[in-house]
Length: 143
Image (cartoon, rainbow, N blue to C red; front, top):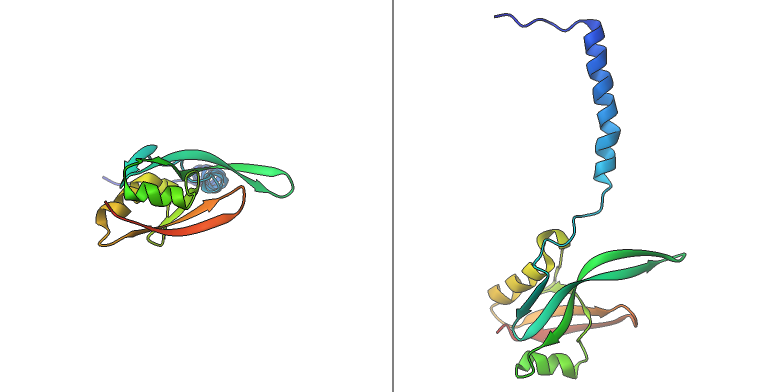
């Protein structure tokens, strides 16, 4: 069987259609990352974390909402809880676990669980309180 070669008018129509798809592909490239891949609440090593919508202020008066892992509570009998309460960490956003930034597309809480599960020693969390700009870098027991 022989393939027929496309003639001029047909080729122009195909190229015109492809030309219309290029801007559409560029528009999809500008979309923000997908929401956090979940889970949305987890307890690990006596600490409770949740994904919460955090409003970030940009000048002039513009706000954008991001899903962030937040340390929301803990089990009172656990050593990690006593440390978190002593340093006033409850309510702070978790930025990194063992130096790795938490990414919504990978599931921030899933990354936290992995950090605690695979750590050979203490797990270092970097936390941030948006209202005051306060930061903390704390080593927690892995279990």
